[in-house]
Image (cartoon, rainbow, N blue to C red; front, side, top):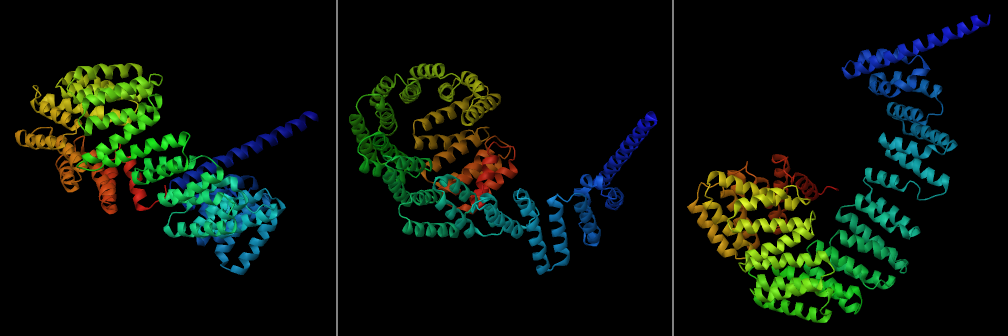
Length: 605
């Protein structure tokens, strides 16, 4: 008898597994019908499978999706009710039934009652609040999701529970002011969460009206709570986002005084202004540090950066005003005297030297200053090697190539496999190129093709290919020698001579493979001189006449930047960025162009 009983159980077990295997096979067949677009056959198969409650979980998602058409609504509701009966603890089935019934009945009063009943069920199992809210958001039932989260806040007694979710729902509903209200209320109770609030604001508000509403609300809070520094910090953040450095400066001052941080916030703001090349603003910020904080690291940093900012402003003008250069040179001299001849003077000495060499043509003075910079930075290998590279550059200006090569080699050795070492090797290659030693230059450049920085690698690839292509066309390298001399003139900042030489080359070598390279270098010079129309003409020639050449995407990028940065023509800049990432999809600039295009279009990135 026992053996018969065991055998009977075994048969039942075998039959159950066989039935399950058959059902699994049917489920797979139904999925294949869906993939093949045979929805009717899939429905029939799922309808048969739905008769067994154990199949419901497996078929639920696909079957309800198939029954989403209006003509299937009764069958859909019937199936969801069966699913709820089989799995009463599955809140998602109940939400789906609410959604299906709501979309069928279109009865606001009935829907409200049904949702109230749903809330009652969720409160019986509070762990459902978060997942049910997310499910409703995914189904685009934003009002219900928001109501659910608010109920969850009340239930748990936490007014800021589900903060990110609530903010996202306000965003979906276009309620940017509600986002601001929510975050300011949160910040009032949680001042240490200032960075979190800033991050959420950055992702969710973007229009001028949004920022204006935020600004007005913050000022109202400051009037009521003048001791709450988090509002000053939020204003500071907002003005930085809008690049309103004048107003950001006011808040930075207030924050530094309240926190007694000796100008650290002002230093931070000054650095941001420098990164954005807002040198006028940077000078004002650093001058505030000098006025407010007469000692300490902030003071030294500010003094140096006032002069550095003035130098950048000076370089952006053409022709350079010699009186301004002399005035700036005197400021560097005073700074070095004030700092004293020590390691802190290394960087000012280096920058002062480059001013002497490139703008006042005092190469001998520059060499003396750079040797002093090297001496004072003996314990700082990076600072020392920066000065050595600059000193080598001066020797190139001085037509002392051998001295330059030795210094570049020294930096290559001490900064091996580092970006600065690669930079030294690139400059060494360019010296060989200027001298017409093209094979030697190419040897250096080919090593640099795998450099760690994109800029160095790109420069190496471009110059190597240019040498190779032109030596194939003309083994004597006659045209290339003329162009390499132009390169030296450009390095020496002899822009007018360089332009004259390039114009002559276009006449002497009209069919040269260097023509697009000449146009590109001309465009760079014209842009530096501020003659943007001439720059654009040269670039358009490259784009139209040499669309397959290596410089074509570079030309499109420069066109975009001229329109964006120099001519403030957003629409034309967008056109060029769009052209770059559509017509030159494989370009290394394609991703940059796509981001720029979206930013100019007003997208939130």
